[in-house]
Length: 231
Image (cartoon, rainbow, N blue to C red; front, side, top):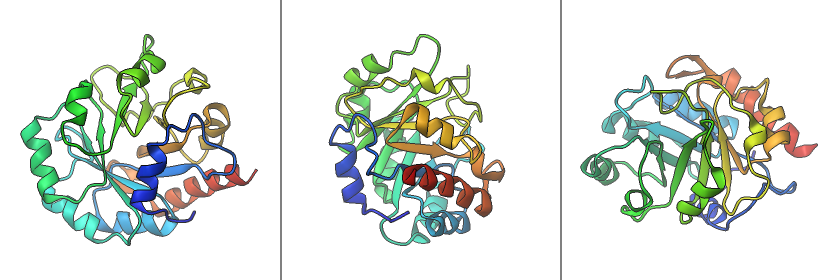
């Protein structure tokens, strides 16, 4: 997978692509990076982005110094995404002042105003509970760079390891869709052909244990994404 610059990725995210065209490779984000060596493995495998979790209750949470060390290990043109869950404004601003993040990801109940107050490109996560309205959420967060659809589990804001029904992803959406929740090398091909997202986001599906990535699983996952893109 060819690396794409952060600005190019942000620009593509903001163009309002409804579905991933067959000529464009599906973007891959590996979330929950906790170690520099895992970030290096992700970059070498050809992922487009890494996710750093700034949610203290997550087993994949990182501190500011840890995040800086991880990002320093990355080569150019790998997008860095910071994940927050209903964080205080002071917390987000403290991270932004110290960590070079390209995109913010809001994974809680943040309002559109709360998401845009930092004047940064952002992704809004929607947990796909039974009554989730993807179209309404996309309209509500119309200025988001993309909508990340994740599995719903009560009391767990993300990283459940479970999948949702990918047929629930609308065929026409006014912004890029990033698919998350229970993805791995064995099922990502089905996910891509069913939902045709702009990108996929994986964490537990490429781990040997929570917070520790497995280089072989990462390569296998990305190889499957690339294979589907060629077919």
